[in-house]
Length: 244
Image 1 (cartoon, one colour):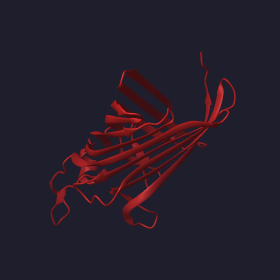
Image 2 (spheres, one colour):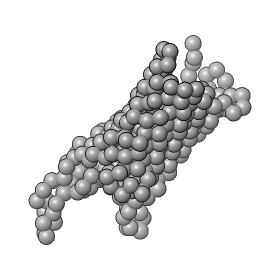
Image 3 (cartoon, helix red, strand yellow):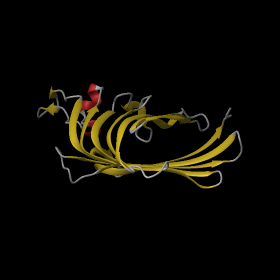
Image 4 (tube, one colour):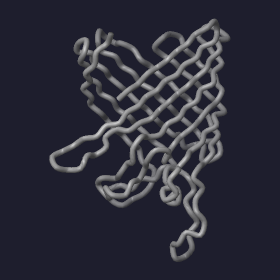
């Protein structure tokens, strides 16, 4: 896992860049490796301070994954996701509130977003929220699905990162999005939490959780029922590094 932030301040102008990359696998016995984590997330931003703690802002985001993903419990030979399937882009102007170095709120009432599903097979299935292919009565495709979907809505972001006691840091990021063009009452949720414990100068222990909900993403449960579902993931990480 690798994350990096770059910030530049000049007068009332503030530029921010946040990059979060992750790729992890688990190997149990003689079984094939199973992917446990896969993330590409880049968030650039610009803000202009117009009052104490308040800024006009423009924030963007790109997110996708590195490797193909599989539903190991159903079929480990047919991928259900890959790089740019899905891929998400968004950008929007808004207002940012930042009272200190460890807390921030941003609201963008007019965020333009683009969902890309680069694989035609996945797009035809309607994966990740694109409209599926048109089928005839025999189930044959008569018109392939578009591999993208445009959205326009409101986006809210809240971030917090603070050392609550010595050597223990808590970080969280909450993203909410409502698409004005399609069921705006259904809110997409992405909530990430990271608790980090610094053991010494070269060893750290991290516990991360991620909660996702997207009303357009259909998931089939163990009983064969298909519909939107809340997804939850937790990771325990032991990191060895050296700062100089």
